[in-house]
Amino acid sequence: MDVLQDFSLLEQAKVRFQSFDTRSSLYKVRSSWWQKFLSLHAQGTTSCKWGAATRFAERVCPSLQEIEPFILPECRNSVLVLVNGYFEPTLSQTSGIHPKVVVQSMERASKVYGALLGQESSHSIEQESHCVCALHEALAQDGLFLYVPPKIEAGPPIQILLYSVSAEQITLPKLVIASGAHTRLQLVLSYHSLGTVSGENVVLSTDLRIEEEASVQMLESGLEGLHFIRTKVKRGGRFTSFLGSSGSSCAFYRHHLSLLGEGAEVSLEGLFLPSHKKEMNCQIQVEHHVPHCRSYQKFKGVVQDVSRARFAGKIFVRSAAQKTEAFQKNQFLLLGERAFAESCPGLEIFADDVKASHGATIGQIDAEQLFYLQARGIHESVAKGLIVAGFCEDCFASIFVPSLDGLWRQQASLCT
Image (cartoon, rainbow, N blue to C red; front, side, top):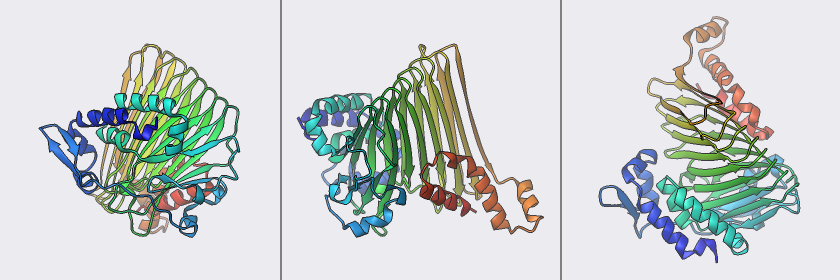
């Protein structure tokens, strides 16, 4: 059975979607976004449904010359291109990827691994707590399936390039990434668009599975739309991620991560630089299910002019997860009297032998630091740039791709 056309899954997802409270969802994703792409209509007082005018991006194939400027120099031979959410093998380069790594479109993978993917999709729909993600499960048309067999090193960083050419149509790609036992994988997710087309129409759903003793590093750069990611880490697995975003009118990132095997470790970091009335919303939930696991979160933001940023993080430690170590840190720097930031850290601990903490700060540039630099002949704008760069410096350690490291350092230095 083709998972993408499985009628029972579609109905399950639609029922799940219609059960949500629309009003609380509109708080998380702007109503203008719904009206522009989904054509949703109120149904009763709380639930909603989509209308016939909803527009979905069609399959198009731009030239390689159009795509080439967005391919990272470190990934020339290991780039997988999705255009409007559809995997395009003719634009992708796989010569640098280990030959045993499986790379397929979701349409093809659903025919080969239909039973497994169908079971995973059904479970995801049942557990989903956000209506847009449930909608995605109902309507996703294509995407990418990436599988690294056990004891394989995938090769150089693999770039997954999501390219949009349609401004008024919604794009719904789905990624399923599985890293077998004792494997090593480096991933880069990057978002680009044609000309003035914005990436706000991209709604990405990612399922990431990390098996025993596997190591996965992920960079995500340029998020403008919505990304819902579910990660499961088994015994001894290692997962590190970095999210860099300058925001948009509806940028939204939601990561639900489960540590399912002893000795699993995860590190989640992010840097948000919204400006020009843009927004960035981030939700993180890390669940510790078993003992002897460690999680670390660090998210920073520099919010300029009248932009807005929100962070909501929760660490959930179940009763069986003794000897857990879990830490969360969130800091926002406000540049502008009307800049807005909100931080909501949280802990729910049901075990009694745990090391856990969270902290959050929101503030402006220290006047004494600024005076100190200006008193030594440094212009105010340059001095602010130095302070911002120092604030962001420890975020760059997890960026393993030099070209992206330079890009985000440059963007941080321009925040004044």
